Image 1 (cartoon, rainbow, N blue to C red):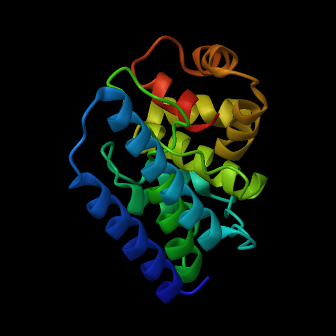
Image 2 (image 1 turned 45 degrees about the vertical axis):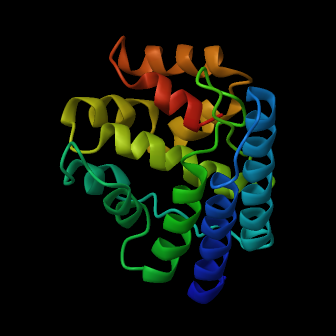
Length: 192
C-alpha cells in the first residue's frame, strides 16, 4: 500500500466522521445508530485500504534490547521503529495500521461510543498489533523486559496472548508474566 493510498483512506474517514458529527439527533437511539453507521463506514474504508496488504515481518532479533533503549513513555512511533528497524516502508505501513487499530474495541463502551472491528486483515496484522501493545507496555522498563525474556520474548508472549479466547484468559497470562501491575487490561484488550 502506498503512502498516497493511506492518506486518501485517512482523508475519507475524517471527512465521513466530520459530516456525520454535524447532524442533529432527536434521540439517544438515533445518536447510537449514527455513531454505529460512522464506525462501520470507517471500518470499511480502512479494511479496503489494508485488505490484501501483507503485514511487514517484525524483526525479532534484538527487539527486547531496542525496547529497553526506549523511554518508559515511548510513543507508538518509537515502538514501531523498534519493531521494524531500518525499514521506513514497514514502519509507515505498520504505524498506519496500528493507529487505525488503536481505537478498535468492536463494541459499545459505557459511554455509548461505538468503535469498528478491523479484524479480517490477517493474523500477521493481529500479531503486529499485539506486539505493539506489549512493546509499548514494557518499553524502557528493565524489569518488565527481563520477565518477557524469560517467557521467550515479546513475539512469543504476543502469540500466547492472541491464543487467549477471551479477555479473562489474556489477563491470566499477563498476570502470570508480570504480576499484578496496572496497565495489563489495555494490553489484554489490544491482543484480543
